[in-house]
Image (cartoon, rainbow, N blue to C red):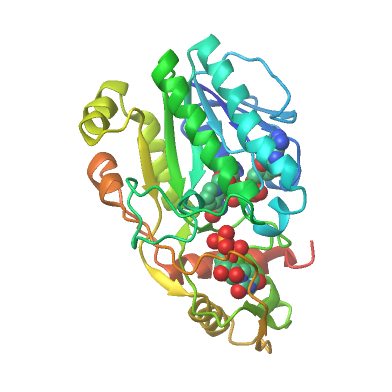
Length: 327
Ligand code: NAD
Ligand code: UDP
């Protein structure tokens, strides 16, 4: 069935991939974005599609529209960008979510919200299951994002309990791929852009901290599978587990140190003359990160299929083509 979809943050990295996938499946897509970190370059080729509309709008300002599904992605996701205007980041996360939920309540739209592994903070539990409540600094430099996202989860749960809004949460672990902005600042795009430009790779701290990297196509498969499930099936899965709304970790459990990632990137770009240089570790940088994806496997019959080498090759190819390192 053709659905009318709204993607907030639709000109960003993940949003632009999601827009393409939904259009390919025959849906109508409105991409809302204020272009804070997103760019129209990500969606230029979609602008001529009669089933695609771009809406220049800030999600913190009220908006109206009749949609079947609202995908809430609006929020800067890279530490350097979300820390650039931290008050705006918390506002985008919380007020943006509130606006989405109020619209969903009035129009009976389903909501898919992109939460994050950051809600687990610097985890004391490894790997992290959905039942873990996290270890988060409320007043640190990452808190605008972490606590903004936690508050968005809280208000989602209350709209689900109080008003019966159909809202589904995915907690996304570090995701990468084409359409990341060359100045995005996250580690995968930084290392690739640096290696292609023969600039030194900036390794923060000793590089022993870990992350689990997921290729964007795997994330989209999980998101679309979750949105497609009937509400009754979700209730039957989550109620016995003590959850009033669906919450699913989506990530690739392969765990790598950041130094390993730097070395892998250089190995995949053998012509690079870059070296690895040490830079100070940012404050509150989580030490370990790895998703427990038992629930995603069971509920969605899903698991990641793109390993890190394959995903890095595809992303390197994207940055190589049309010299996106200079954009
Ligand atoms: P991104 O920065 O590329 O995309 C975010 C988009 O939201 C951008 O296009 C930006 O311009 C837009 N935006 C920001 N503030 C806005 C506002 N006030 N109003 C309207 N639009 C606004 O980042 P991404 O990686 O594509 O992330 C998309 C979503 O997924 C974010 O909510 C992020 O928190 C979440 N997420 C991403 C990751 C990841 O690893 N990529 C991990 C966890 C969660
Ligand atoms: N990082 C790094 N060099 C960079 C960018 C990031 O060593 O140029 C490190 C960063 O300190 C963190 C990890 O890579 O330990 C992942 O950082 P990113 O900003 O991609 O995501 P997040 O910290 O939000 O998981």
